[in-house]
Image (cartoon, rainbow, N blue to C red; front, side):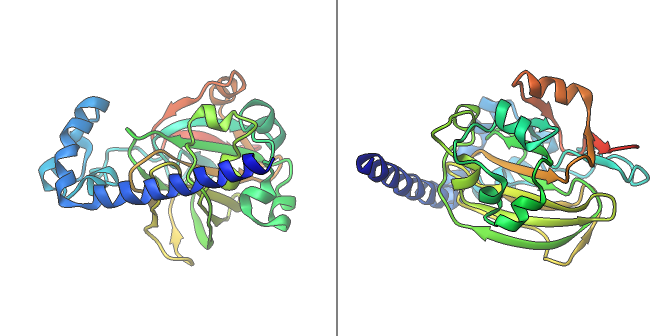
Length: 273
């Protein structure tokens, strides 16, 4: 037991050091030469990028790039109850936390209270619906607001930088969403009430940045923030019985298959609409 604990602590230290070292490397001007090989290897469409590739000063500037206006389609503001995907991602949705744990989030220490780092907040969303958006390195790495809301609060939770790939998330011995460095935001929506939105860092992602201040009133599709190099995840939790996710997404998630979605695509609606 002691050996296992010491081994885990050593791994955490190693991952944090590696992430910081890689972050410094990709902030350096010399990293600019990594951009074009990365684009070719992952078949990224450079025409969507806000700037020509040659104008990014380093790799991280490209990795956390904005897209040209119109690159993603946002559901009409008239469709107030429609939830838009907050990111280009591999999406999993679940009607309840219990379903998410049975099918996808297998960490033996996972609870909402631990993920939120807040016992009361976890209790308030017990049985709620869960949306998990996993961003792979090749994805556009900014995330956006899934509905009209006010950014009520953001709280940082320090932690490790485990990978967020499916092997880790499906493992009982790795508790990615309760141990990783993350930020816990509360989005106050006139349609959905208060929605916890968890921004999870991962291996090589030591930097989570936000584009808006607490108190900002934002529209569906407005930019929320982004990640520097690596894979990462954003998670939204809705109160029990409030959301109906799209049937095709639910069906894939129940087969433990992630769905490829683009930021802005409809993923669900308020129950009853």
